[in-house]
Length: 376
Length: 219
Image 1 (cartoon, rainbow over the protein chains, first blue to last red):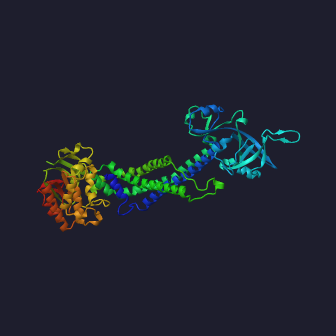
Image 2: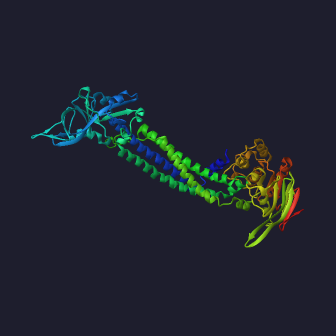
Image 3: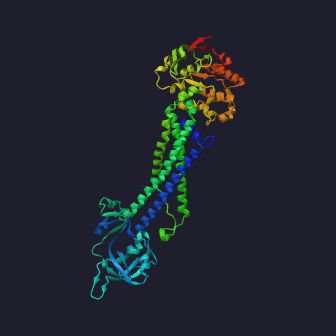
């Protein structure tokens, strides 16, 4: 076994378990808890971000292509689904209640195949039918089978009444809490007979690699860009959580510094012996640096493993339940990626390296030769 | 000659005055011989051994170990690891390492594989076969010092430097250690430079010298 690793390991875990005593224990726990907290927090934020993405995609697809040339999409050889749509804003009036809605008109068959609406019934939808969201239904007191009138936002008014734009039958009610969609987004269908003259755009679901080079970013917009503010807010939240919780690791690294300083001052005699037997000062410093890394990486990797286990158990058994009325999902969503864990470990290695090196600078002032001369 | 010392001088500053500890010392040691040095406390024995062990530098003069002039060396790690073995008055074992690991330290430092046959021979030789996995805390004073001797010889160094090796042992263990030195010298041809107060140790020297007033006298 490598002598540096052997001695570092034995200094750390000797028969007098935890030579550094409390300081070692505190650094270990700090790093362990810090790493676990970061992974768990990021996993929860990722989980909700994932829910946000999944729920958004159910209504809007992965991308929107702001091109009304459906033939181009139809002819491209790609592995994706698409749905041309026409979107317009209307007022819905019922009794003394009113609401602004966005009516998305899509091909009849796409309502079932492209969009993933959590509908009460799976009734087929005709040209004069509408699917509204649950929140709108509750707000306006609308039930399946009711007829509603929609009004153009540029209201047509004659001398006695407001002229409805169209009268539609409520064929179904869907649920999707994301971005309060089910309060303002409604679906209507067209077929080749009542096809709109031009589309608002084409929503796309799946792998769009083939289209990426053909359209500029302002023409081909991802769901993240369509919901930029929300998505960026969650991203910022993730970064803040990461750096705030990383402070735990930084504080624990201060303890690590003390721990290494303590062990190195305790072990000056051993350093002198090693030096007398030919170990260079650089290698002696490496012993203490290895000691620091053994302590910290064990704690950090331990913390990461514990959090991964908790994430696995939560995803498997859903120990922490949520109210879906408020949180969309029934169980706390958790998701962590290799990238985030690598980032955490890399940052930790750098921080621990810096803090573990501080005592080594002090150690350089200790001359093992003087010590060995005193001992010889 | 395995060790050649030519006119070395060493002095220290003692509250503004220059204290000359070694005043031009010269001697040679043949391979496979034992040099014992005695002298009163403060006569400079430890200083001389520190210089021979490359733990300190002389003010002037030359020291040759295996024809290597120490004045030409910048880094003594290799010399200490391959050419020298140290036995201290106190065993100075690393308490976290077990016996076998403590003995292997010089070999592990050099990155060499421990000579297992030699190690086994030493364990048998030193009567410590049943202590291989013990830790220093579990050993008696005599056993600890024997382990420290094993550590000093594991790399088969050119010279073993021992400063008061029996200074911390009772007479029974001191006698055992003296016998071991003689056996190691005889069986393995190891060269010893020993500084001691103990006449029994002093008597095993093929060359015997006394350090007095900074000068080395042949006895």
